[in-house]
Image: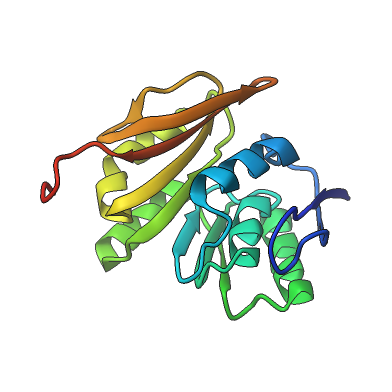
Length: 187
């Protein structure tokens, strides 16, 4: 089993355990620290979606910092089971929902159901075209003032109408915080 540590909030220093899985790369501590500095340390009341949960560290970090609800999506059965176990150990079942599903199919069902999020985390396996497949769904997933966090194998200027407002690089990881670039009132 692999481990990663939550770095802030209610569960600071708690360790999450997760199995090996193809393409699973937990977001490094310093990148998470930068991300949550960008988002603000306090996520009270926000609703977040982590479409490629993997270790779950982004979603659990958001819940630890006060997010009202975090939906984590993971396709691999063993990894989803580990996420459920970590949610149970943290006592997070009331705020964290784990779905074992394909990210694009799950995102499509959320759009059809009218669910919209304050923050969406996209950290998919590299070089598989996941981001391109999800871009058309973003307007239905994110609130107009919602924030999109993306980790990718290369620098990104935008994902659809969401434009990069902050970015960085750590090792092979390019990370981006994006905001909707549509004029106010545009759908």
